[in-house]
Length: 263
Image (tube, rainbow, N blue to C red; front, side):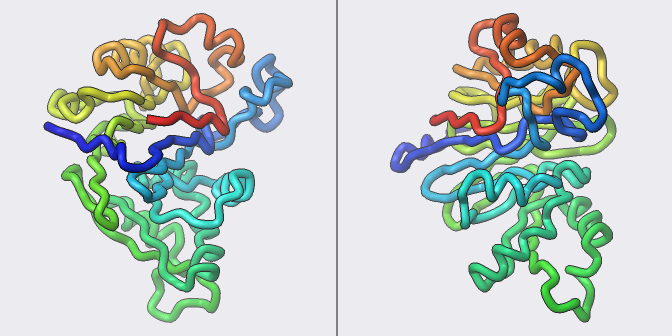
């Protein structure tokens, strides 16, 4: 399978959030990680902005979406791609209202059918026949695990499992982003060949029911063989950034909020 490099424009992934579902610091926690003064240990819920082939794609819009938009200084993104329907990845979608107002359009949201069905319950007021004035306007575009097009730019979904829940990661040329997974079907590894950047999740060292353990994530990263692998969806059960980065194998490093990487 051949992938376009997108070399005709500046391609970049910016980590808007790299924390697990509770973020870091976790409410009420006084552990060394949650009380760290290193800004790289302050993690909003996981999300990333990918600038690729002249378009901007936001992967997931969790409860921190508004804060992430304001912190980034961005006033426009072209589309939101949803990996799955858990609230730490969709809970900020109400704030699309601001983009509806600024751009006078329904906002493109790409997701699977079961994710749309969840959104219809979570944001019922946005899908009702008679909408309350000011409700967010979504232009939901259904996708599967097959490649799809966004305004002339190809995006390649990557199927994975989050315990028993099927989810999607996404590949943009030389960069692939996959979070909230603990299993990748054998057939999907073909889509992960020849990467410059690979983003993968882990939450702790030991076994987890729905996420890769640290050792599992490292094994997957080594198999994929990207030039650089970044770990995201990190919890306070892993070390502080300064200690964590020192212990990881060459080519694998923890991501942190605000990190920008070109590809």
